[in-house]
Image (cartoon, rainbow, N blue to C red; front, side, top):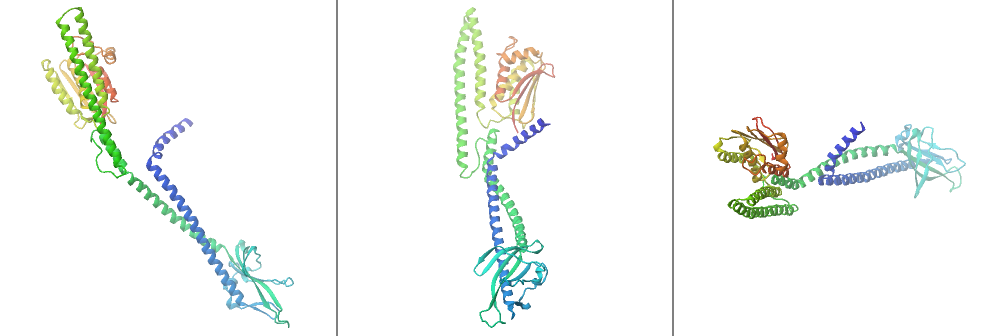
Length: 473
């Protein structure tokens, strides 16, 4: 169970890792992080600013109520305080309404404390008071577990019942309001702010993703153009690119052109080398035939061996060179039809019939000369051993592959001899013309292209050669 989970995790990681390593993912991730950080920071400051504004409004309302309460207070002849009802906020009359007043005498000898009806049977005690001029600010625990904001002022009233003119009595008049109002407004604002910033953030992220996708479209066009070149559908990067991408496209086109020139020079050197080697070998062979004898026979054998090796390694070198050229694309049917027509004429005296079955839209991702080399060797070998018929079949074989099958109605080849022919290029019958290296060369070229080659039993009774090569969709 644990191994299965670990295997699934590795598979998932392998799928996700390339995406996280992409340029688009990095740009989007960085933009998303900075957007989230900016929105969170902005939301924090906006929330604090709104709370401060609500708090200031709340304090202003408390101060207005305090001023109204002081205006409504009148001293009685004995030094007490009497309130005129018309100046007082009606919320002071409702029990636990969230708005309260309290008048506390400063004289220790006077114990009477006047409270609003809204306080019912409780009183207010300021916690950690803060002085601001003649006003005192602070907080207090109110009834019904309320948290109160308190504003207080000291006021002196004259005692008119005494004869002394400076006989006054001081009081602390307090007004308190429930902070739940501030919290409720702040919470409502924060809720709306979170929804608004969430929608804004989602919109910004979508815009960022679209912007990155649109901004990186030229790179996708470069990739698609390179795929067309690789598949042989184009020879250069085509189209106009932005100023930042244009130098890259120009350098890639220059690199492709340089690669073609290098391969062209290499092919020329290969051809020159082939001509240089074949001419002396032909002279040696002619001289050996003109002077029969044991030495001449030995020279002829060595010359034939050298020719076979030269043909073999020149074919491999040419095929290896073509692999480095981008844009190679060969139509399979055209090559097979041409080869069948030529080889039927060569073997016309034996009455060999070659049937070709190939879809017209099948393309080989490689050089035409290499396909002719492989197909020609196989079809020619089949014609040499066939009694009357050779069947050539080409068809798609899975993703980016195609298969070529050449069957004949000849005597076939035993399994142990197939290995000798492929691995060592050994010629099994000297009576049949040829160097014996054709099948080995086919296998070498197929491997260079990432393909495969094997031999089997044909449905016609003879040998079946199966060749798998890369295709172009």
